[in-house]
Image (cartoon, rainbow, N blue to C red):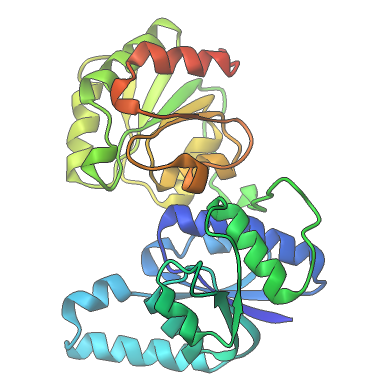
Length: 318
């Protein structure tokens, strides 16, 4: 069986779809999957053994220069590529108008959420097969149930298996280094935690004998990382890293403290012990999901000691 997965973005949503791919691989012998994904996230689907081909799309970039000649040529190449293959089923796991259009352009039976449960109800009109998958489920379970309903199997494993081939990640030079990763950056300002609390958390890590590594993705996060690092000699600001490189760094960590952002979902997919801090979003629907994951809500009322105590309760040690 050949299927096309349409899950364009964002990072956390893409990672949340991986357990559904594992379910399908277990249930259907010889299944082969292609995946359409935003160009910034092409690394992620390739981590799963059931993914045969990753097809990049650049909607975010194309929208900025829609009538540019180079943009139109790129779009033509994409449409030609996606129509070149015949699929048994096309699964739109995103439920948005943009993803539904992509799923309908491809050749095969298009499947997705019904109008009641799609994120954008209009998307359901583009599918040949609609499925009633309860919107109140966690994103991981919604994806798993959509795959099972569309492809006609029962989910065998209760616990999600992200299926990531860890050998895809680069090897660390120093596997004995004992460190934590603080994922302090996120896409929205109201999801951020105060800088001074990160400073205090780094101080508590130093007292306990841990080094701290700080990733960053933009200039604002780079500045914050350097501000935190300037307060303590146990803190390292990481160089600009690919997602695969970050996977290797997370795999080597003793633990993670994270905000509501894509890298927190990667740590969950790798089963790295993590405490994730939530403010305006509901972790029951889209929080980190898997083994060794702890959620703390109302993060604006949390201090560094609260978070550190929760981390220590997870059994982190030197």
